[in-house]
Image (cartoon, rainbow, N blue to C red; front, side, top):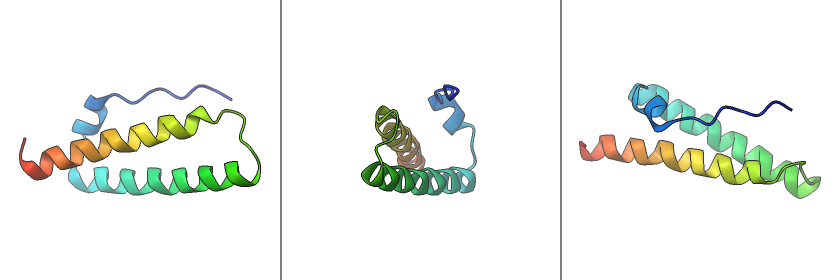
Length: 70
């Protein structure tokens, strides 16, 4: 399995609000599926769950900054 490129905060800043919301929704769905598959059959690298959670948190932080007007 190829190692995924770690997304930078600048990547999220360049997205439109609608695109950012869609990306957050997609990543949250991916996290749910990953957690379920890990519960049924342990995945090869469980640290990917942590990385995905942190990625979602970074996106939500950017979303909140925009809402506050920063």
